[in-house]
Length: 96
Image 1 (cartoon, rainbow, N blue to C red):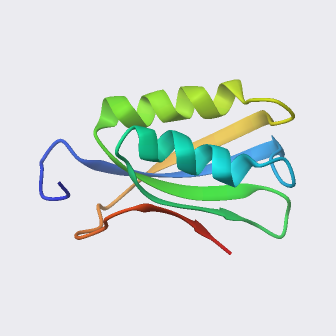
Image 2 (cartoon, rainbow, N blue to C red):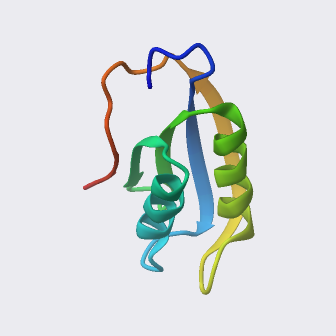
């Protein structure tokens, strides 16, 4: 999958009510349901960072879903930037 020329990788940083509300599991489930790879991690400044890899349209869908939130999750700001793809990545993980 990673060798496909339609595959991109994005870095994201979410700010808002994104820690202690199940946000990382939410992002992981949404990413996996779209066949994306990457990771998501809580940061000491109360933000959550992530890297998402896959087809651009599917990443856009994930970003839309993140911005909508769910339950107690409320994203007030979401920054995104481009990254080089990672060869051989197989899953979307929660980093501790």
